[in-house]
Length: 110
Image (tube, rainbow, N blue to C red; front, side, top):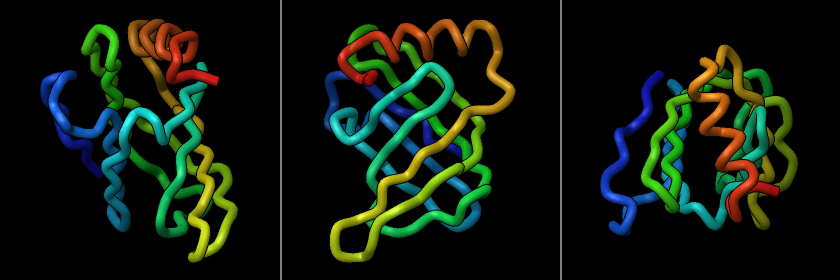
């Protein structure tokens, strides 16, 4: 599993990159809801529950980056409307948890 390193905050690059052996997604900040222990996002393809993924998050406010490992806990939807995916992060460092809490309280969070 890997995550793409994200570039400048003001570029047109996505704010979230997700990767596993089977799936790789590049998502913009407006399609992701960040929580203090995970994220929710829309996916054009289903992702199997309990799949492990690596996520790279970049804050559009200060450019700080977080790389997190997590597990897909829910995926609902269909091929016509897309899939709503919920992911819980595992093994966060204290520093990553602090940055994630800041992002969760920002406009990116719920």
